[in-house]
Image 1 (tube, rainbow, N blue to C red):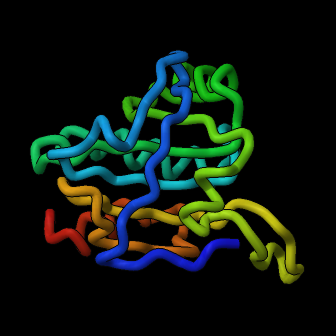
Image 2 (image 1 turned 90 degrees about the horizontal axis):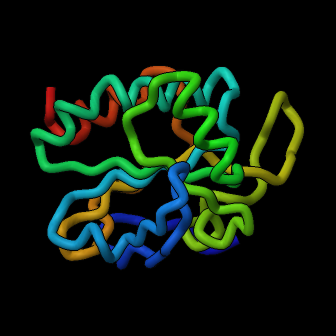
Amino acid sequence: MSERLQAGDQAPEFTLTSDTGESVSLADQRGKKTIVYFYPAAMTPGCTKEACDFSDSIDRLQREGFTVLGISPDKPEKLAKFRERDGLTITLLSDPDREVLKAYAAFGEKKLYGKIVEGVIRSTFVVGETGLIELAQYNVKATGHVAKLRKDLKLD
């Protein structure tokens, strides 16, 4: 697993396929503030809650200049079903090889129900206009995370 990223680090570049089949690159976001969040699996209870929270907050986040990119190892087809099923309004990206997850140290050992397992570590990064990480949060909780993030960003 890569070293955990922190504020001031250069955000690892990526180009991934979205739920609509388009290629989306972090480089395309230059000049904007971007929230990149990693979640374990589409259509699971916690991930659904978090994605819905981001979707519910997207208007406010966009008014403040933020774009939101959600990344999981799911294939684009599953992400499209996730968007459709839950009416999501954020961009969902597929990282089936987990290369981007690993570059952000969002994949590795974690505790799940008291056991050590390897998997996606629910994490969120705020990438500034120049590509530097402004905020790095690991092991976030699905429920209430977006509200906490808005508070941390002084948007509430």
